[in-house]
Image 1 (cartoon, rainbow, N blue to C red):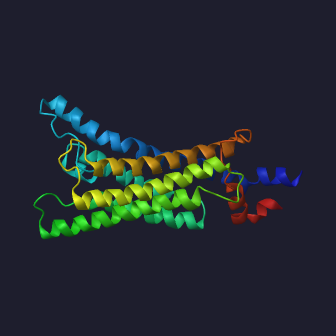
Image 2: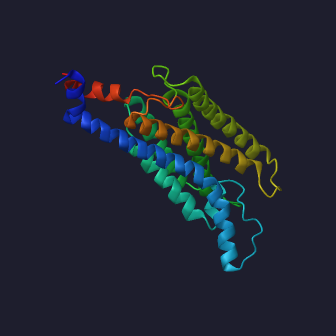
Image 3: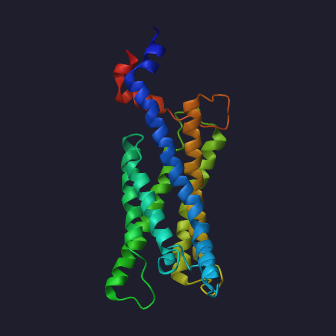
Length: 249
């Protein structure tokens, strides 16, 4: 039996393949939440008001966090809790494990600490500050995945794919800064769709697209789709071998 066949048929190598599948599903889950949540909140508000015969005026929340005080509060909180669980359960390598665990805690923090409402009490304002801190840290951590984890210079990742991850990470940070500016200045507060929500939408879609792309990458890696030039190649096998060196003997 050759070295390669022994490595592929060993229990540790087979366990590594299962890990790849798990990581793929977790990446896909994080990405889908990022893509679906921004449109789901205003659409859910509009649909609820239509079904209950109420006026649909103001169905678009001022920010994603403001959904806590609308009909889609449970959607917002549930999605963030699910995002937190996916991120805490995500395991790839030591650095990513730490980043994802921290991001998962921040996501749950955003869900459990609502933004301060109009006329908030002192306690509500304090909780609102925690909400903003958790939200900012969550976006920063997700940007780090795009900038440093999914972009892998040690792999055979095509340059255009690495550039796409770089663009996603930069967009997250730029949109985060713009949302801070929009919230601080109150620009567009009287618009039907506020700039703050659009900035949050851009940041959320950026990380969602990056995580879905990373899921597709790992699925293609597992299938051995080496002919797909657009699919990046992250060295998951190298991580598995490093953790289970006996598979190489």
